[in-house]
Length: 126
Image (tube, rainbow, N blue to C red; front, side, top):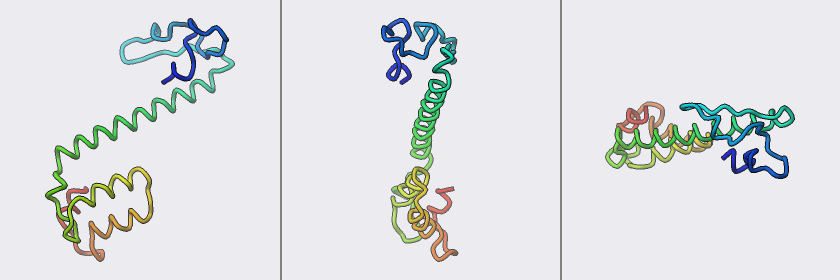
């Protein structure tokens, strides 16, 4: 993603790359990559690199969570407080992604009806 935004310095004829050495892949060492940057673009490039890492981490965490959830809970067999199946995992996902108040309200109602009745989905959601 970094190379999509800025060319490698070894390919940068317009002198717009923030990198001070190239090719960039030569700075890789095991699981780490050290980005040597020119001072004038260091702040912009490091902020963008941090955003890329955060986005990648979120995507990986979401994929792992989905895989684990699929292995641990078969939501087609888990009934919520209204006797329905399948709605709770959708609401959990929506609440995690958006934090929408209406999704929280419905999720609470399906997990703890009238604030006192729980179901199998209540425990599975934990």
